[in-house]
Length: 500
Ligand code: GLN
Image (cartoon, rainbow, N blue to C red; front, side, top):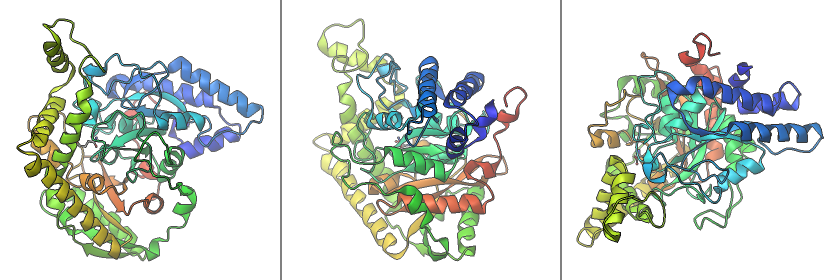
């Protein structure tokens, strides 16, 4: 029965523990919903039907025999297709370059999900190599927003966000280099968290910009996001940037949040020109809800915020041009079948394998790193990055967390920004600073526009403040009279005849 899919992951766990349903039933419902709806949404690039059902049955058997189960205990989960899975599914990054790539190992986070008894049902669409803000840059075609099929789901983790919003799965993983978890979470009306850099191991995440990339949870509620974060967070010796400090108990950290004592900063720079009036209003109303509960709201300055987009698109493209050098048709990836010698083979393989946006990034990054321009562009961008970090440090000395918008507008229509890459890049203006500063950022739904499109509230905090952000997000969900996306209602596509 697919009403099981209206449950959150935590509710599913309780229902399974009480014997009201089984992992097999939940996984079968998830696969059936994907089968039914995904032709129109396009959230998944691959699914693991038989294998997932067999794993679910094995978990049910272990439960029946009284064996203790891990924290995901049979819950269906989806992962973004830039995470390596050694289970027979391809890891494509939505690129022709990797269309037939089968990873010989699984990402750390995938191993953690399996060890926690989660059942991976499939892999989700994304902008090619996670480069984009709309999931329009996928070699397999775009994902559609479940709230309005004419609109983008946001990107680059648009497939993961749409899968959760359409209740195909309660939990998914995304990756966030400049907003790719938070921004699609905002556009699809779900919760998305980019953890502190180093909190989650990047081992087995196909690298885009290594100093910015971070994997994080996407879910319909803050509580579910905390559940998945607890599973994936923690030290891993295979990622040299993984932090040694053990993660806290996120459920306890959330319980410890006392909203009446919270000091919340509103960055002046996040409420200026370019912010859509309806988004502005919904975000301010959400912040007012905290004020009414006794939180203190203060305005803060992030004076270098206007330079974040420029700095990000130098740092991210520089790192991408270096990371993507490995796809030469020899080490990794597609090899052109016809060529005249080695150099021609390299260039034809890359010309065939990469899409336009990836090529644009490689060219920008190679230029920024070239000997004549390195100091003027790349080094300058690193200095600006340091100043942006300092802005956050200063602001977070005065307040516990910052709140503001995720994106200047709600989800836009297909094609609206593809002709003008700069317009697309500017939509990242509120999210990319957190990656440059390595701090955690969360998106929680705060309402819908008059067109019915979801809008997220962004919360930013000091490094390792995930528990605080999740606790504040859960408080807002409850104050809004529902859990996460549920206060928004349901995407209409779920109520169409024959879909429920
Ligand atoms: N939209 C940003 C970009 O295109 C961020 C992408 C991401 O976070 N992966 O680079």
